[in-house]
Image (cartoon, rainbow, N blue to C red; front, top):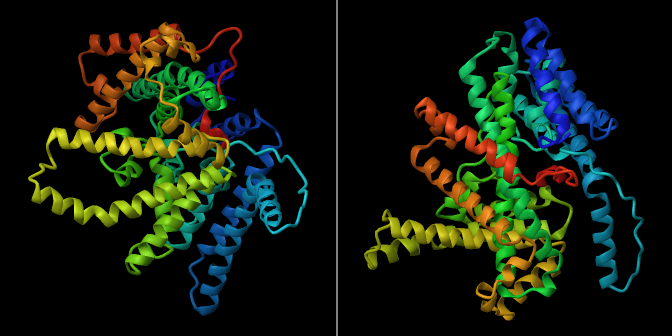
Length: 498
């Protein structure tokens, strides 16, 4: 069930109505039923997987959380957390990476002269398995580290793992935040008008990002990347640029809808994006992009590997490994690994040249806090990030290199003046709508960066009439310019596949 589907338009109000009228003690049960129904709408069999992961991590949490100490007890706890991690990663590996591993081994054997035809199992990837697996594992590790106590109420813990707003594409919540809130679910006010309106604003902005910008940009992006060999430099640059916009608005839109839906019910989910394309370095970009996943890899991969505590060389190795793993998490293809590795290289090089940049700034009198310097850094960072997105979007590493090669060898500036750019996939009107909506996004992110608040919160701080005008304008833009219609299937959110 997609957020931008007719089914959800009926599902969510019904869930809300029942949630607000039933006795407080029944809220956990109702939300758990609704969450499993939401997840089973894709495939009823998926429920068995999430239930199994829930049972395993819940049981391990209880066993690990026992207070007894001693060498034997410590060894048992270590064994339990290791088994829990291995079991969950094996399930994730089977459904997401088994075919990829078989094909990779066959490719390596072919290089040495051994031809093997791996079986194509065509395993169906359960929606959101990477997200809820990581969320459940973080709970087990947190209990092991004594950051949180073991949850004894199975229903409450099951809801933490399966909470429908953020179930299939995050944010990847921590037990410190979401599980603690669920422990106090009976204390949530029955009706809080301010909270409900704020949540509705979040959802409205999320739908704008998804339906007006992301789905429209996808039309152009799909055409360019699917037929890259027919296009020249400027069409390919446009394709790469609009993919950067598409994936941000697609995933950012989902996160805003999820955060808003949870807020309406009285839950606060963590922020997942913070104007990432206005970052002035790649390192800063990763503090602003997919924050829940970035912090997850930092806390549960980078720091356990040693972080920056084992010397410079080890720090860079840990950084690179973390980003390779991050790339692999996103998809079972070497193009994702290349994307992650490229960001790892960016991080290492950025750290290495940081002292040189500071010395150069002092030598040439560069004002690092000046507007002009910030703009140059923002543009430079975006170009690096956008270059890496080509590997993320391309179907293979070889296609990514071919795509990049054509950018540098098929110079065709005339397409900017002869109108042929409007024949790629979007006509002149559709392109203008896309550009205008993207400018609105840029302004919203700039305001967020300045005021340290989401655009929806900024709007609500204004006079009532202004807030209503903005809300109506956003709603009407979705109705009029949203990509939908009788022949349109609600476009799946990109991160559902991860």
